[in-house]
Length: 114
Image (cartoon, rainbow, N blue to C red; front, side):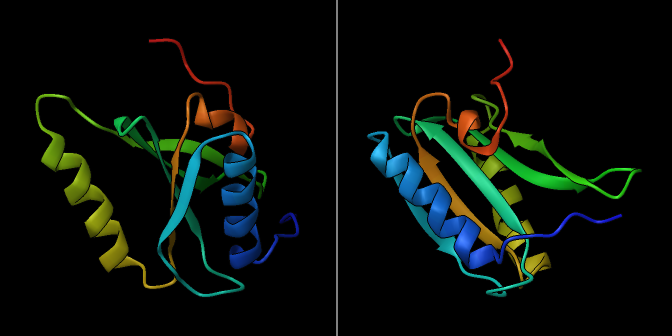
């Protein structure tokens, strides 16, 4: 059974506000469908160490956050290309950027150790 979802605009706003309260920066890079749109969270730490998370459907009907892409320091353009491709593929997609240390805590994940 599918879990009830917050409207995308509310979830995006809440994430940004939580990060700002914690001393970080958050902004919306792309607005999608206000209620039923999906969310991609792009995280940085002082503008570096880029990674993107999206909710992926699970076999039990739930949707859990998963790392969709991580920036390769040798090919930074590949990460940007991925984000732009996803924005083009899904006009309902909200893209939220968060710049704060250990940003995964804001989506309920512990950051994997390197």
